[in-house]
Length: 161
Picture (cartoon, rainbow, N blue to C red):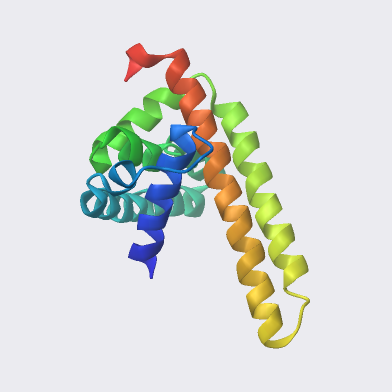
């Protein structure tokens, strides 16, 4: 399921970055989807381990790694970067905007926590469905917001990457 979820996130990222309101073309959605999915999955594991180690050592290094690598999936989905190149490009692109991106990330995380907590009060099977739909909606919103930030920063500084 994690690999399927990664493929969905790659396609969603491409759709949000494309900016058209009438849907994404099949060609764009499926461009190197298997490679992008594997890169996203394994790159995500690498980022997760780095953030986790940073959080275990002290909170600050984990947050620095999180913010510096926030655009790794966008680099993979949009620019067809490999995992290490995506992390490197994300790090370069976030330079000078890390405080703002940290605030955006924290707001998205808090929104996800609040929605998940509130949805958790609905009992039974209906509660599971409500929780899944609610938290998935926040996840899609997070992908959209982060992709929009990526597109804007990329347009402002194309020479850095």
